[in-house]
Length: 54
Image (cartoon, rainbow, N blue to C red; front, top):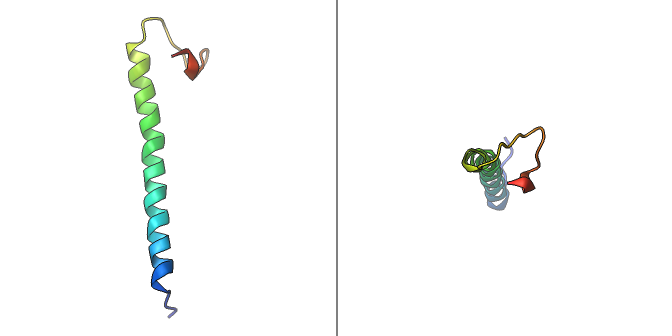
């Protein structure tokens, strides 16, 4: 069995934490976009409009 130095284990844990945070932020982006889209007065379409139109 190979033992890894503590710094390697910390780096792996940090990478996993950062990766999880990025996934949450990615999902949060689409949730917030939907909330803003629902509050928009004119019709908004993902196919026809850009995010900057919001």
